[in-house]
Length: 229
Length: 229
Image (cartoon, rainbow over all chains, first blue to last red):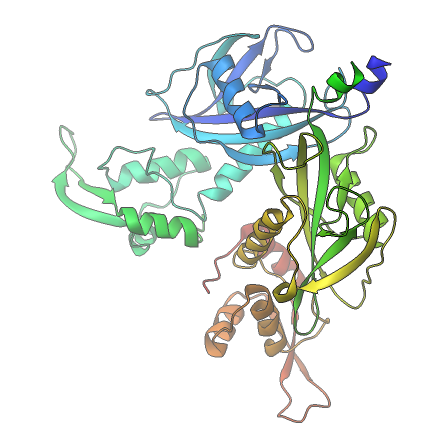
């Protein structure tokens, strides 16, 4: 009876796709599952939503418990509601995603995950459940998003060169961009402020440093644009 | 025991925001609730997800049962997971939205809704549960979407005037657009094909008819653009 009742409504989980950016790579945070199903396999951090927490709170809690990662701005991605996603029972999962700067954030394992680790996208293992699919949807969304909203405010140092900004886009988009074109577009958005400073301690000719115009950046976030790759 | 179990996991529902376009207005499809809670109040069509259907199937089924509307292309909007959304118990709801052309689709009431009705946005009643909020998120998404993806393929006749296309945008965006600017942008997207035909039976000077270039329309759907209002 209790078992029948248990199956009368779908269970609800959250899954988090956390992208991390370092100087060279876009990475994703995975946990190694300690328990069945899929014990020993890599998966996205996540777990069941408790009755007394919002779905977003559940995502934050699970991320913190399983990876030690805290204070991450999670955005809702999509709810995955197909049958047979989970061999245990019917489970619907609300997925979240985030993009953080690596170095400041270190991941550490906890609770039902044996360990947490950042994987560069080109050496990612195949994932438990339908997490490969969830990851792909998140990656597509991230790449899409940088083409209609500005990024970089939380990901670059306060003052940065145009090359650093271009590198950020190249790492996320996974392709090289034409330098002239990129600069023209970025400067055309009127979101960058030229400073009087130049980068320090470089072998090549020092490049000028820029910063974001905070108000215009916020405006552009709302209004959107279209950055054609 | 069974009651305690019942509350151990959130219930899962779907809600549908279906926008309908006629010649003049953008409307939304609401149902009058027959049962408590909120009996007699207007609400978005929706209901509980069954264990043996995907979340999207649940949305289609509820929409069909409650309004008679069928074969609508529903897009997932957002999952609303706050506590206390529903006075009965903890309920998380996956919301979907759609935009249909009115006339071809007629809504009709059924099952636990006393009746279904299309409301012009400026005469919408206040809604049950947190459905006002869900509606607002859907409306914002719709307005946003037409600024970065082409629309009209399923909403206009096969051949249409630029005025008809402009009117479509004006109704969705809820504001008048500058005619010259609008035409320039639309023609600049290379998605319209000029035909040799002109509109018939009009008092004013007959305007040229256009049609969409299907391949370019599909391309633009994928690639996106930015239509600045």
